[in-house]
Length: 61
Image (cartoon, rainbow, N blue to C red; front, side, top):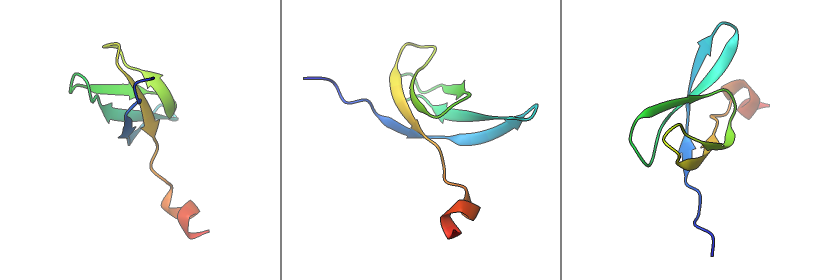
């Protein structure tokens, strides 16, 4: 049986015209940055799924 991959919610950081996803790692507790949401592997080797926050403008549509 596969180990479930935890979901983490991201905070967004705008840098040089790009959005980076900042997450607190469920394994090591440090902050990791990623360019895309989805299933990712952190620099510490842990796996998690980044759930991006919805744009408030999209939720109203």
